Image 1 (cartoon, rainbow, N blue to C red):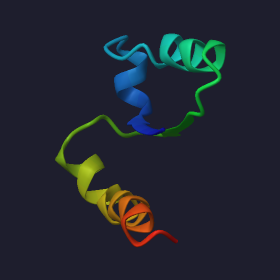
Image 2 (image 1 turned 30 degrees about the vertical axis):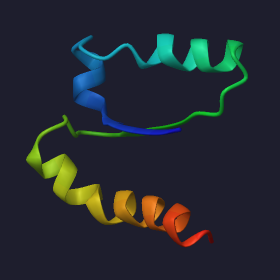
Image 3 (image 1 turned 120 degrees about the horizontal axis):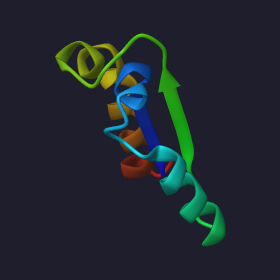
Image 4 (image 1 turned 60 degrees about the vertical axis):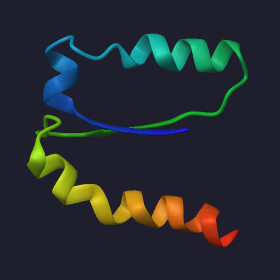
Length: 64
């Protein structure tokens, strides 16, 4: 699992990624948490990282 989020939304306490990370580790479920400084989860965050997101999914669809 890859989870990308902005640091400002983490600081607000809206997302509890630390709990998700802990649960994934206990269940031996891989997680890659990417925290991007000075971003929330607005349009600008999505627009900035959408290409990377789509390439991630494309790699599984193509089997590469």
